[in-house]
Image 1 (cartoon, one colour):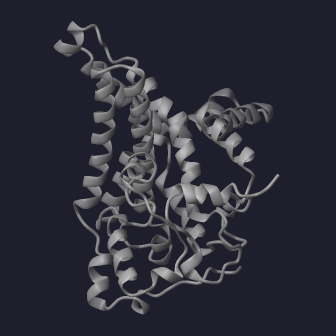
Image 2 (image 1 turned 90 degrees about the horizontal axis):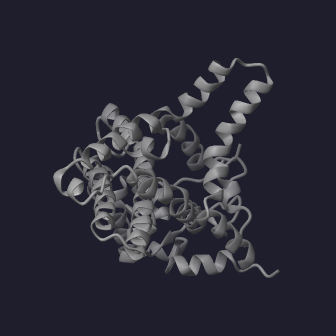
Length: 327
């Protein structure tokens, strides 16, 4: 197997520069998870307070962006970066960041570390995400429509469980055993959201909401499930495109295994949360916590390294390149 080429921190940083970049924080990972949830509740509260199409669209985009943010923070947990105590790291990464979107940190870690080991090589399990590009604008438009209409969500999240149940029954597996298998897959998601829904129902009985007959029974499907089924798949696709689309297969240069994309305030709010756009730096130094990646980027720029890296000035630039194939 062709293992991807790696860089050594000592090739770019002095020991004094590297130590704070690689250091784990006892509070920063916890703060970012809290920030994600505070942003989610703030976006939902804005729509509850001022219900109209514009605030709902904003809520869907912001909440979907924070759902991706939680996935990014779980990803940091898979690298052991959320907290210096590994048990705390895995618990918060799995239950507060992964479970809300039915992601499992241990399962993801095994898969994702293979991606880093074989980045852009034949054995890279994520190679299929970038291999088709560039594609035509029509093809990209179709994919984005499938994302926004919930088709991608159904295909990736719902259909596999239905297929597993059906195939189990066809093989003669007892109904209860088949159902338990599907339940085990969704168990963290169901537990987390059972608690969340109970909290929303309780919140809906508060005097102000009760006075205005605004029980919150509808909030979970409208303000969690809809973003998860529409905006979240779309920006996940855009993130995947930005990170690895049109990157050479079997690329020998470790500074060009992934792409870093410049992201402004709006992009960071609804598309590229928690420093996910610094993806080249992440592949170069995968054990650096996400919140230190901007500092890594600045130091690399000062040292004249950025010019050798794969970068893009905006997500629009990446999409134009990814959809540059003529029919």
